[in-house]
Image (cartoon, rainbow, N blue to C red):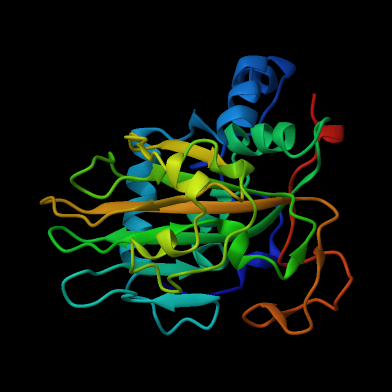
Length: 295
């Protein structure tokens, strides 16, 4: 893809192809979570949301194909053509928002930024972008994403005030390696990382207590293309291999409440340094929703 600029310098949507602009209180109210949805999230650790139209998903998939071939870009935080092996292939990258205008604009989508604001505190919070991810499992031999909690990879930031938004770009089924969650596991303590590159699905069993094993009852979400699952940073989740005859692709937008700070002396993300104890803000961590500026 052409690389005319680092899009992380632009802190608003570039066009209206992916992300609509809320122009009225009526539109704002439509994307807010109901009391029932908020209660469901607090009890189970996740909530499903419609986000993208079929036409918007098609646009993102066209860009995704180009991005998977753009390993040489210096704007990626991470680029892994394959985190598995030759029979279990998993494409995984961080940083598409800096390269693609469409993935850049997705992070401002009110269908999830408004709900995130509602769930990050007792009252609506200002929401900042953390980082994005792309996951691609090719037909027949797409790899696993081993069981894990996202915050186990994010302990360099404090306090824990994060959320994950997993957006399906294909219909997800058991055959193609759909997203799996363990409802209620967001109430468990932080678990150690047991499979750094996501390959070993059974490794998490070595760190679970007998009580946690008793309640380790995963569910398949069966997300439709354009649908999202918003979940807690301690939610245990993963996905099995893709053995279908079609691809299974998704994008993830990770966010946190304004005020989260660095608790680490090195790079927070590749090429991004924030002094320990200082708030994450500025070019790489823009505000993507401010309830005080909503209707």
